[in-house]
Image (cartoon, rainbow, N blue to C red; front, side, top):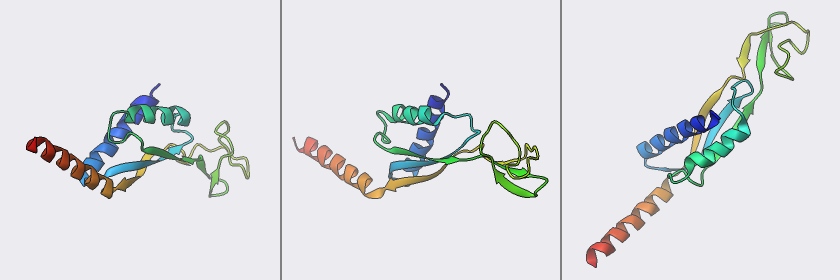
Length: 134
């Protein structure tokens, strides 16, 4: 199940960005092409597992499914394939392997919460101060 290693990579990248910017991540947005070789349901499950015991625990993975788009040399147009089983133009039937979209596995956005990080830091300071005064 290579989806777990992919999910771990996504979590690591999101954590790194969150730490760099001093924010908390509420959601990770991902583009997933039909030819990416990744099973969406397995990735969603793996993301939850990879987030456990990290600052991303409770965050969402929001996946945008991308269809396969090919370029038809006969029509000279981009066409969306109705199925990944047959690589031919759905309009004229010309065979084509010129894939223009559908292989993506791309994190393209993070939803962050700056206020939550500040609240957590304040609580942490209060705990430390109360421990010092004891």
